[in-house]
Length: 316
Image (cartoon, rainbow, N blue to C red):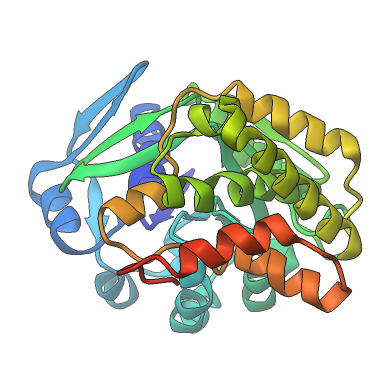
């Protein structure tokens, strides 16, 4: 298969490198010094069980639009921050209309897939998430990643008319699984996205606020109660939004996060590097939906408000 990885940071570069290592054809889209290093020196990925260093096909957005067509790709994987989804789709709408490539979101949040489907149609939209993975660029052209990097994906929306062909979803999943990462192809991707949103809302803002890793937040009695409460609040907002979430989903996600290695969240890494925080697409989404449906989410609102008021922090 022919893959386009858009946003080749810690997460995108990791999956892209694994695909290259198994013989897949992959093009990476990046920017700045990271792009320049990938073009001149190749890509390096360091993981406890996977090491990669090789030349790669890397281009800028401008070169992609000017020199490549969407028909050159079978799968387009979006791995940039959720606040960049709508602007990217606006810039690439005409380009995307020139072919039939599937578009797979491996992003945080629950708002990406609807925006993608509105642009390219449900038949070309795959929802997805990356679980138990923490990755970041430690130097231009070099990525460090932790965790098992499990992928969950499925057609969007869940099994409705107009959704993508489930066999194409399985084909994408099989290719990713051949790279050595665990893959689950589900018929209920919306539920899975909300289950991960529980973890992201409970972990990302709190880690940015405290500077602590996932294991500390989920095990230390000073924070563990708040983590569970925020997961419950996300579940209630999801139910009010029409997503069939259960108390068991909260229990499952609590158990999952307690089994994580000590991973730095992406929001903590962004804070340390002075980058905009992905707050609007995580806890911000929950707060907006909670207000619309009349759901009380006091712990989520508290942590969101504290992060939003941190000195020198830009919120995206």
